Amino acid sequence: MTLFDLFKRRGSAPVARERLQVLLAYERQNRNQPDLVAILREEIMAVIARHIQVGQEDVRVAMDRGDTMSTLEIDVNIPNGGALIAA
Amino acid sequence: MGKVVVVTSGKGGVGKTTSTAALGAALAQTGKRVALVDFDVGLRNLDLIMGAERRVVFDLVNVTQGVAKLPQALIRDKRVDTLFLLPASQTRDKDALTEEGVADVISALREKFDYVFCDSPAGIERGAQLAMRYADDAVIVTNPEVSSVRDSDRIIGLLDSRTLKAERGESVNKHILVTRFDAARAARGEMLNINDVLEILSTPLLGIIPENQGVLRASNIGSPVTLSEPSNAAARAYIDAAKRLEGEDLPVVLPFQRQGFFDRLFGRRAA
Ligand SMILES: Nc1ncnc2c1ncn2[C@@H]1O[C@H](COP(=O)(O)OP(=O)(O)O)[C@@H](O)[C@H]1O
Ligand SMILES: [Mg+2]
Image: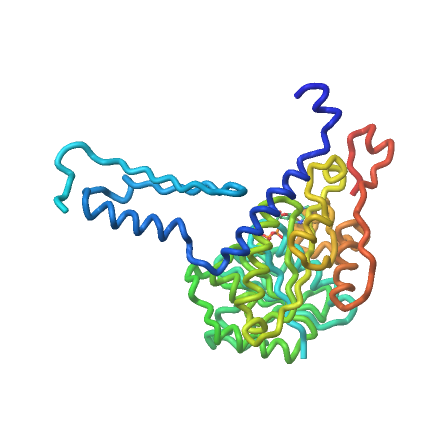
């Protein structure tokens, strides 16, 4: 921390308030909705499993919520050798 | 007909049990007939905070299952004779309580008491939902801290959807009780501002209870802080909150650090 930081410090409370406002607005909106990431994960798993032999732990679905846009990240680990299933 | 008040929070360790005991005792001392019901099945603690741990014979589950009659299970406080406790069971079976069983006990208590306080377990699952199920009022215990406020928001969502009142198209009367408020840290901007908390949760304030050593002392000796140290800052804040619950229109004052020059010099904190 620089001397300047010490002077301009207004505390961390305003940051806490802002984070809460954004988060709760989202959570309230989605409160009675099913968990989108869980549904996507399940359906993506099913599609992949039709073609490739993968375990639950080989598929990772992550969501990063941004202000104007969100990203959905899908990570599939395909074991080497003979795991492909003929479609 | 008595009023059923659930003391809830979502998050654990924020002060639900402390607040149940302190508010209940404060009201009982004004002559109201008060029953405190511990819904924390498997983790009962209200008996300990009330200093009644050695007098527990029957519990809430026993009554709902017909093993004991309500009057046999209610423990009368030794200090205030209008104050009673219905302890939680120590069973590990989380399904020991049923909705019908709880409904019967609550309606019987409603007949006999002016206030029935339900001390909720932490979480948002079945136990917490049963504790709030028949509530008229809810005291939402919140610490000025992000995770506690988030959990309070979820609890508010449940109060507005899963209670009998909500299902009948009415609504539970909700109040925020801010506890463990540290005036010094708030002044430094390290703690969420009370107005921000109220605005975020859009729920009115019942009181602000300062962080205070007296609360721990009271729990050590098994007494609600409002009985053992009624002039202590936390106790006074609880007594005022109890009056507001009664409908009294008392202004809420921010607890401030009563720290004199000598206290500061010797690093001692005002009680
Ligand atoms: N105002 C306060 N000042 C200091 N300690 C407090 C205060 N309120 C609660 N505590 C302490 O916090 C801990 C958790 O309180 P408790 O009432 O058991 O919470 P909960 O029932 O929500 O889990 C206890 O050790 C209690 O003594
Ligand atoms: Mg508790």
